[in-house]
Structure formats: C-alpha cells, structure tokens
Length: 433
Image (cartoon, rainbow, N blue to C red):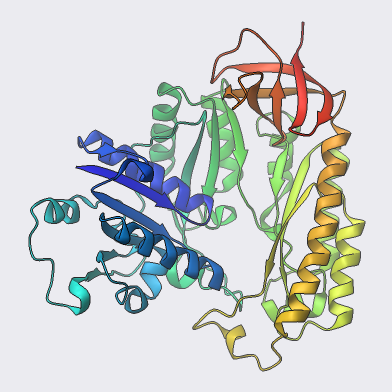
C-alpha cells in the first residue's frame, strides 16, 4: 500500500506527521509523494484560522478526486468532523488522539471492507484530546528533527481553539525525551527543534514538577554534538535560565516569541496575561545579552474592537523593537471561542489594509536583519545542493537560509561560513579557509 502524508499548520503537526511516517515505514508501509499516485492519502489538518479550514478541505477534495482513499486527522478533524464528513470520498476522520496509530484504519482500507453505514460512508473516530504522550519513530529527509516534548494548552486566549483541539497541557517524561533524542542523533540528525503547543509549560504536570530550561540543559549536556533550537515560546515563560543557555551556546540564537498585539487594550481583550511594557522588557533584555540573535513574533491584526489607536500602537511597538521577522495573521472568528461572540468585529477591508501595513513593516525588518549578517561568521548545517547545483543550501544557527559556494560539502555536515553578499536568490556564503 502506497501512502502519502500531507500536512498543514504548526510545527507540532509537522512533527506528528514525521513521527507517523516513521511509524508507518517501520511497519512496512511505502511512503510516497502525493504526485506518485498513492493508494491512501492522509491529510493532517489545521484549524487555527478560517483559511486553514479552507485549505484542509481543499486538500481532502483534491486527494479524493485523484482516486486515493482519504483519511483526515489533526485539529480540524478533531473539532469539526461533522463538516468534514460532508466531503465526498473521505473514508475516515480520526481525531488527534488516534493520529499516532492509523494501522487499523489502513488495514480496513486495504481489505476493501465496507467502512460504515454513516453519511457518505465516512467513519468518524474522535476521542478527547487528553491522552498521555508517547514518542514514535521519526522520519524526515531534512537534517533537522522536530522533537515534540509537550502537547495541549492551559491558557484561555479568547480567540484560540487550540485548547479545545489539543486538550490540557501534557509533558513527555525526561527519560522518553532523552531516549527520543538519542534515536534522532543515532539516525544522523544534526539539529533538534524542541516543539510543542506550549513548550513553556513543559514539566508542570509531571511529578515531580520540572521546567523547560531543565530539560533543555539535560539535552545539551547529553548531546553536545548537536544543535538545539526552541520553537515558539510565550513571553511570560521565557526566563533568565533559557537566556543563559543561549548565551553559552547550548541553544541556537533564535527565538520566536508571539506578542499578538501592540495594544494593551487588545492584549487584555485577548486574555494574553501580559502588557506591551513587559514584552518590550523581555525583547530588550534578550538583545542586550545576545545582540545578534534572531527574534520573530506573531501578530493577530483586526481583533474585535481594534481601534485606529490600537492598531497604531501595534505599528509603533513593532517599529520600536529589534525584531527579525513577523508572522502576520488577520483575526479569524473561530467557533466556540469568546472572541467570536464579541460584537465589535472589524470589517474585512480595514483588516486587510492593516495586515498589509504590518506585512510591509515585517519585510523591511527581515531585510534589515538579513543584511546585518553580511560579513559575519555563522555556524551552518548543510541540507544539500540547491536546484541550480551551484550552491549548497544551509541553515544557520540564527535561522538564516544560506547558499554556500563549495566543491566539497555533504548534507548533514556542520560548517563555519562567512556571509559575503546578498543576491536575488538570497545570502551567499563561503566556507572559512
């Protein structure tokens, strides 16, 4: 049976798809690209915005039209299986808790059995998203691996459905994390990206309780030969212990810290639990200790009640801070969230104009950070040849994509390079002699 896996959404979804691929490969399933006419297509859906809902449905319909049998899983499948069940050609809808073992469903498809008497012959299997975490084999063609150490969220941001789709925060044990990292290192991965829905809450549910900084230091001590990178972390959960790990080189000089808005009024309405002054202090403290670090952030624009002043407060905050890149999202009304009931929704035209303004600021900031690295020496991991076969593609420790001129490099190798120029294709670098 040939299986293709298509993934939408966050790094957690990407990590889970890679683990699912590893699990299926170990069980003798053939994993192929979607273009290779798979027998079964697994769509790992996302529901963070209305756009991701649409993209999920679009992928499912496309896969069904191709003649493949289709399994939908992920957060959209978890929250609104009734919507997905209306799509013709969809065989199974599996919630997040069932994502790590799809073999029974694949076996049913391979036997060509009657799947169900339900609407459109689509069987739905949804369980509460609160099961204990386990580690599965991992497969990726890249040199970097995503290690999911945590799932779920105990926060209650008024716009977000993630706690509904993922459940309460749960952490992987230290022993399982070390064992998982050992497998990844043995398999040749050179960088581990620590990921989760809410990694800053790691360990608070364990007995005895522990912390993110503790488990990251354990990984750095056990595996000094690999790079460790943090994925997104909330402002109120970044602390001096984590900063020290970046300062001493144990963790990559790259952070993603979502601010969501530059207006204290909107942050309060979002129930984010901090204000703009707190966020400024966090960012400036990091930059003071690590001047060359890359810091990205998320912004939700057009949140209900966002006045012109609220928006310009956001513009001013983003202009003021030394951020390297922005991920900008127009506010999207999500079912069963408090913000969806707010009456002062922002008109689409205004929302689009504001989003475009912030994207423009983000483009300038990104270019400024990229050009500031010309002349610098960076640590990179080689990913392989580029499409032109002239350069080696590489990712730096501060999260820049580089094109390296060399006749003698191999995928997965660590190198020190000097950034020499910026061209139409990106930053050009050369190995240190």
